[in-house]
Length: 165
Image (cartoon, rainbow, N blue to C red):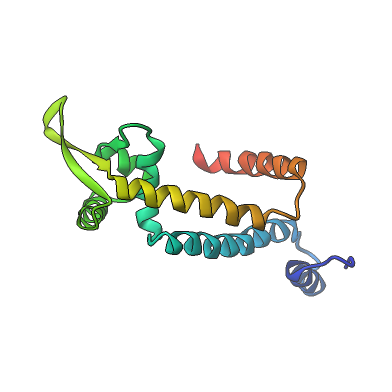
């Protein structure tokens, strides 16, 4: 092991000793991704909590905020962006309406349909959360130079494209 080894190095080394017939290079990559994911999850939960949001609320509110003015999407569009079931989305919208973070409005182009619109309070909270999130994620990546971050992002993009297809 090198002077700069981590827990994954120790795990891979132990497995290599026990099972020298296997290639543990996937473990070296994906175990680190898994461990980093846990750190990221904690940082995100903290950023959302400090904005008085649950992670599922963030998913819906951020989709609306990213849509741009007038911060409005149909429930179907929200389903596509958040990858939850129709029943789950209905429940989430109901709960966000009760918290006055979104409101339902009639779709002017189709009177039978509704649009979900971000309220001012919802926009303030999601904007605060994204600021906290970006700051927290920058701290997680501070040991990497900008070129290293860009290289890592490109490699992860290449890997994720195989799953998004």
